Every structure is written in C-alpha cells, then in structure tokens.
Length: 85
View 1 (tube, rainbow, N blue to C red):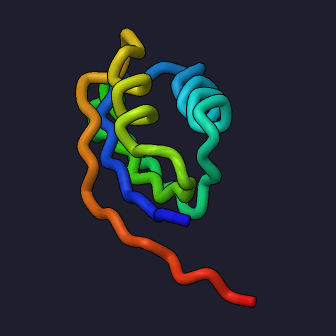
View 2: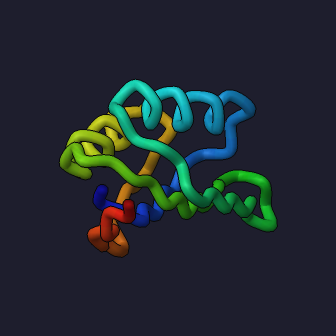
C-alpha cells in the first residue's frame, strides 16, 4: 500500500470536514492521520491528512480540489509501505 500526506487549505465551513472524509472514502483511501487547524480570524482551515491506498493519489487530490470551498490541495509526501505477513 502507498501512503500519502496531503495539505488542504479551505474556507471555514461546518460541513467541510464531512465532505473531505466522504470523498476520501469514496475514492478508496483509508485515513491514517488527520490534523485540522482553524485560522485566528475563523475564515480558513488548514488540514493535513495522511491516507493509504493502492490507487493513484491524483484521483483523490483532483477530486478534493473540485470542492467549491477548497482553495488548495498539495501532495506533501509519498511513501510505499512494506507488506507484512
């Protein structure tokens, strides 16, 4: 499985977290780590999420970028996990 870390910048909306998680699940990715911080002025949110999947990370990042309240998506890190028996 491949593991990826994404940085997402978005407008501060109550339903944002729910939509990000739904898209992540629908695209076949499993959330391994999730960190969200709100700006001091309560206008924007920064999210750092680590996901794993065999699917290309572009499938997820492009879909997240289409959300109207998401202002940016960046793939920060990519690593391949070793299979253990």
